[in-house]
Amino acid sequence: MKCIVVDDDPVQREAIKSCIASVKDLELVGVYPNAIEARLALQKREVDLIFLDVEMPEMSGIEFLQSFKDVPQVIMVTSKKHYAFQAFEFDVTDYISKPIDMDRFSSAVQRARYYEENLKKQETEDSLFIKSDGVLVKIKMTPHNLKYWCSSHTRAFPRLQSSFDQRVALQNICG
Image (cartoon, rainbow, N blue to C red):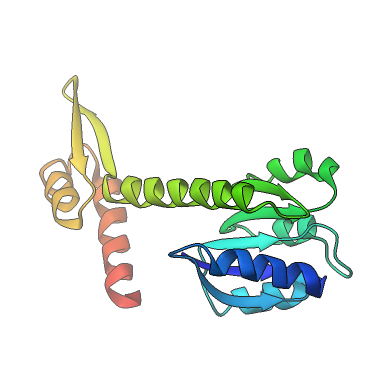
């Protein structure tokens, strides 16, 4: 999993980097002293996981989360336990108190891995369920399957067919 660290305290950044280095399959791709630099970097690079401090100058970790439409997984790392409830309002993956306990760190990373694996599994198992003639029909969400089903039901779903054709055309153009 590609991850970044966002913390204004250089000692804490080093501690988190050390923890990351001791966990297999975590790849540290960026370390940022503030949320603004991290936000700019994330416009150019995708990551799977963010280790994020809450209290930082200029932009807090909470404000950082509010600036995203779709935020990657986040593990909040802070010495202020009262932020835990607020952090979970933003659907963070986990919350670690400073100073960092390695067992707790490993547990948080394991939770992130679990979510990542289930998200990928869910993406590969996407299906569309449509009720047709009183029967619930499951269609695996591949362009071929959906196009075939839509083309055989164009009288009932003409807008669906048109919308699907436009989406496939856009995907072919945009990659």
